[in-house]
Length: 73
Image (cartoon, rainbow, N blue to C red):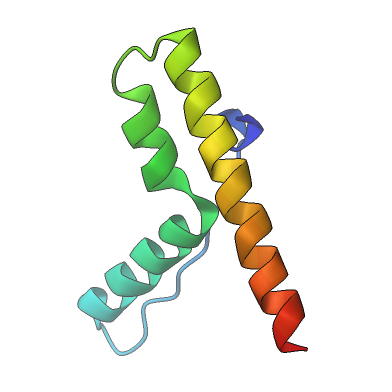
């Protein structure tokens, strides 16, 4: 959860006055950082039991993903 409170500065360069491309790049960076996911989680109260279940599911997914990637190489 430290990502939510961390002061991070993201720089996006606007090239040739192409604001739409810069906004897409910003959205992609925010998506990678997990900002949208954290905002969704923080937007409403989450019971402790629900939080534990969500974190357990996230960890399970992460482990499966890691094993899948490891099996490839």
